[in-house]
Image 1: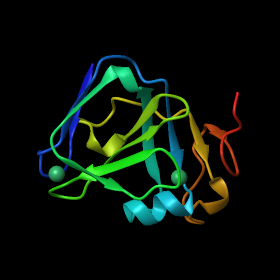
Image 2 (image 1 turned 30 degrees about the vertical axis):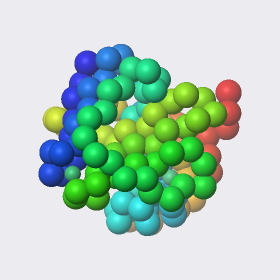
Image 3 (image 1 turned 45 degrees about the horizontal axis):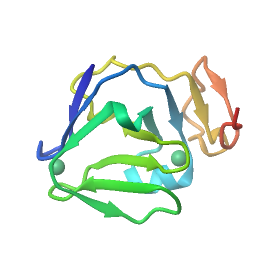
Image 4 (image 1 turned 120 degrees about the horizontal axis):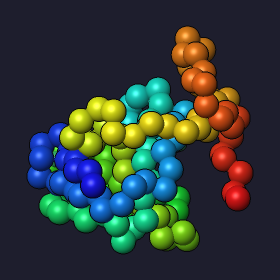
Length: 128
Ligand SMILES: [Zn+2]
Ligand SMILES: [Zn+2]
């Protein structure tokens, strides 16, 4: 079980299971939304995550994306196709809780950033 919160603390969450997977995304969409050169996402079954506090919807090409209504922290993306929810590693209460298993959209990796010793996918990870 892990806990996390947005920058202001108004939105918080608890996870009741181990993550399904954890990865790094370098895509232009994640870059622009976060303002950072890559994001670390942690995916759980939707039923295993409880979120409290007011969120606002953020436009998304698919699924449901939400941010804290007060401070604007990116909180989650819900994939309505798979019933999974993506939370961001930086929201969790401490570093070191999750370790990425792969990197996606490595085509967009910053040239100064070396690849980790993980599975590498130039674009999206192929569906299993
Ligand atoms: Zn907040
Ligand atoms: Zn991305």
